[in-house]
Length: 63
Image (cartoon, rainbow, N blue to C red; front, side, top):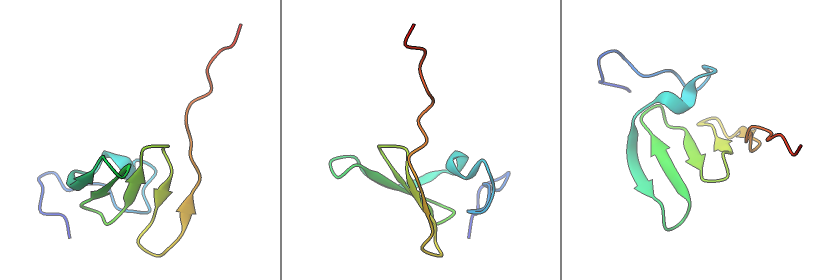
């Protein structure tokens, strides 16, 4: 449960990655957010209910 003011976005919110980091393991490539989402360096997410959000890096213009 988030105790920040204002509260962090929920795990189901589109802006879930804006939640505060409560544990960071950069050497392993992931961080745990206060909404229980695990965020990976490749921009993928693991939600608390086990759902996986595929990496979602923005596309770059190759022109």
